[in-house]
Image (cartoon, rainbow, N blue to C red; front, side, top):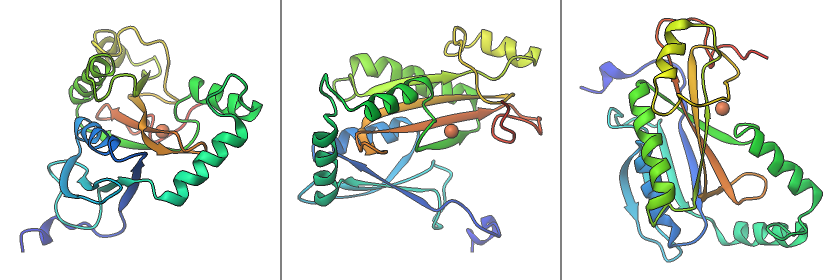
Length: 223
Ligand SMILES: [Fe+2]
């Protein structure tokens, strides 16, 4: 069998279930996942919004891993989020101190709370995807105002990598640094996906690690 040769022993990450808020955000959230490089394999229409199945990329083969499901938030969860928002005055000028604190933390560090990361094997792909999303965050009616981008460069110290990132159309002027060396991070925060403590947004991370280094941002956290 063709797929048998590709099977690897042991365990892998299986799937992640993501949610959007209302039916009309479904196609927009699905569009965002496709722009991030995921491949849609199935769409099922439901009264409260489409159910989608994505796989991690076009190299994916039919096993049970590398899958992202996307569907509408179920009614009880919507109700819970609404109730939390009312109780904590989320989105008003009088937000609960705890909400303000959480927002402040997330503004300083996109990966301080729940998020999900994809590892890419090409820095050029990562640059292309994020530059495109930055443009769409301002000009694409489906994504305008729905995306915030955060960027971390590799820690300085490797002249070759520093030079590549100085010349990068994406990282050239970035002044934030990752918790490690030899790799870069890009964060996409969107309210098209509903997750986290306030159920109002989700952060997806794209990573690239330069080849040939045992120690890098995803292997060792440096403080
Ligand atoms: Fe992360």
